[in-house]
Length: 288
Figure 1 (cartoon, rainbow, N blue to C red):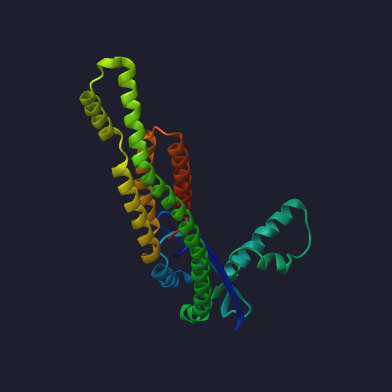
Figure 2: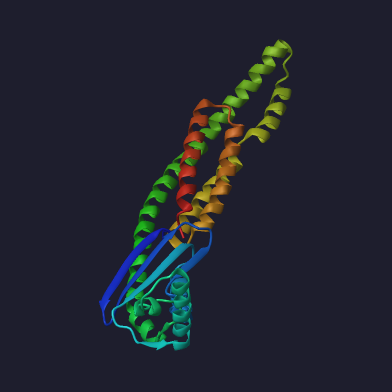
């Protein structure tokens, strides 16, 4: 089981460049991957994206690849026509304002387009420099998500065990609920009809009401959902979406049990069950 939240940072200094890779993620219904890297590395972005998608199924993942070069292979060229045009324009301004003196060289070469710098990037060379740093960061990132996922698994199992105890209580209490319900119906009939109460009529009405208010089917389905959730937690490496769906089904059964309930004792356990289920649902949304 893997959490959708994780973080990792790796860096390497030397070989003409300082490289850092940062990977972090938060919850998301699907995989939302953003890779931030220098524009000249855009041709190799797909390679880093493939490495992520191979190991990450869900989550909003942000990747930051930063490079600070200490040695740069570049070409510098001068646009002398642009420089002459700047000098001419500046002298016209000087003549118009009565300013005397030579035009500083530093002012000329600082103008846009006078000096042009073109860096020569060997993209494959940079990829070979970045790849080992990226792979280490990705491994740490996956380990961090798995470590948090293990914590989530233990918490889910604890909450699911509490929910299972509630289901067992409902199953044990059901015969008592039916017995109390029968007594209540019989008491109402005798109170209203006194000596005219017909036992067959009481039994018929009781049977009809029990069909409407019995919780046996809900208990069976709830226990089945609990078993299915245990299987997902133990056997599915990415159970997040399935757990969310099962939680919806569990919630339906617990709500129905609560609506049919005629006992304060059962009502208290229904509240406990709903609280445990809500905790499970919240945690399942953190799972890949």
